[in-house]
Length: 228
Ligand code: 6GU
Image (cartoon, rainbow, N blue to C red; front, side):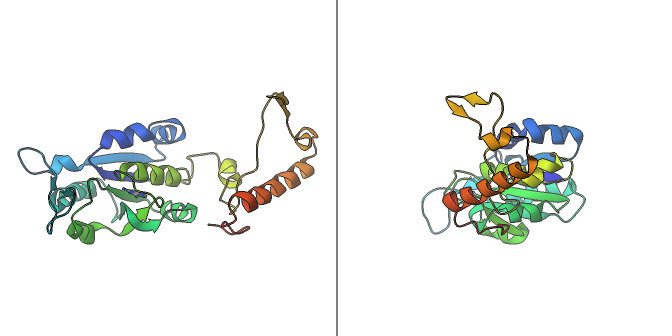
């Protein structure tokens, strides 16, 4: 799967995603993460991409033209008419179901805003989806795009181990059970004895009960067994 980010801070995206699981997946060619720097399409001598908002108000906006030209450049890098996701607190809330849906796409373009936003006309022209990662305001869309890319990429076949993809929090609509590794006693606490019993049926039952209890206590909004 190919991700192309339209951003003013490509080094932030590439630096943030060049680690661990995602880095190795990119090295293997399971995913490809690229950036187009909107500033390269400023089209003026000082390479400025922002301007004052009509009607007044605080802050600056990214002009439509550099974003549109960066998008046209991104299109030359892509094989399909890929969805264009604008990262904005005004978008629909991102969750695991949304991640699963996006992971079925062969290519995605992620548009990262900055300053007070982007001229609405280019959003109308190129954007197919608007996504927010939560009810708080970030100073730019890059961190949000990185969150979406990480969550989507790990659902792409061959990026992570299939078993860990099944077992985790949210995939069954419940939180994950607690886990322990050696030694059996640490920080004055013991590993729950059922995990040392070697009785796989009891271990499974205990883990399932832990998932339900954790979800009930910590996230009662996640309805039992329903995929979010
Ligand atoms: Cl997607 N962008 C920005 N700038 N802030 C956010 C967000 C996105 N999601 C939550 N806050």
